[in-house]
Image 1 (tube, helix red, strand yellow):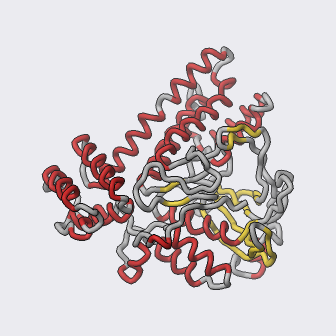
Image 2 (tube, rainbow, N blue to C red; image 1 turned 30 degrees about the horizontal axis):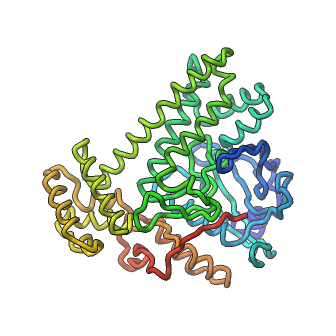
Image 3 (cartoon, one colour; image 1 turned 90 degrees about the vertical axis):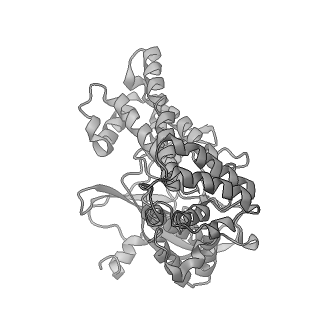
Length: 436
């Protein structure tokens, strides 16, 4: 109720600092598309402070688009309405899909206009996160060879995010192990729903294992492992299928920052880092494989060839990734007609379905169980663009409706069935853009 009051809206718009807050813009460094930049930082974001929520968890409150900071690099520090709504929609949808993510508390119009390719309405997003500490935060201090600061930051991260390793005999290597495990699980979950982050720079990877910084992100429509949407990813570095490899590359940069905390002997420290980094691929493979087996309703390694075969068929016919798995749920109840119509030559999918049915048994999940794993609704790119276009005209009804649908991604919602459909050719979004 207070947030909806004039004082609350003033707080959300960055017009009033709440009692007890000491706002800052945080510094960090980062590898951007593989190139190291020793100083970046929040160019359009202000960290208001921390609150403890009703579950006793500590949260950061941050405003995005509230104005210039010391790190704005000649930018205006503002946010246009479109990127604010994109982050709101996608982050809230990810939460509904049970994927670790920052959250969007509110989006408000700022009342001013911001200059991008054209003049656009300005807006401010209030973001909530378990913290805004990134791999790039460690890189900022490591690049300055400030080992005391790296250690202080590591101690803070352990206390805030990984208290279970505080009493470990080797807490800093245990910290790295925990971050690796969370990132492996996170990226596997991205892959299960066709999510493409779009800008997996080290400054966009949360140390807490949450999805953060929804810039040129998008969701894959037709299955293609090489899919790229981001306009700034010219060489496909952050393509859908590359995300696990890039996550490991980024984690290797984190390990480099922590080397002085592992051992005074650099050779020994490097071996310790390598030992921990070697756990990423097995952890990712296990999480990804388990999730994909669950999506087709099979358990055990005997289902792996069927998963691979299904994906191959999707790629050959450019079949919609999300919808194909959702229609497989119907096939589990005995009706494969809608799934078959998605393929140009049904004979191939018929052969796959025959093999799939033979692997299933009395204990295999039925359609209802599979629908709790395979969502019907994701934030499809063309829907997001339509919502933004309407909002820029002052019509927020499509935004409200889309968010309501995405809040229940695993339910059929027949009255909103159109939101589950892939885009028509003329509706396809081929590129997404960074909000700055």
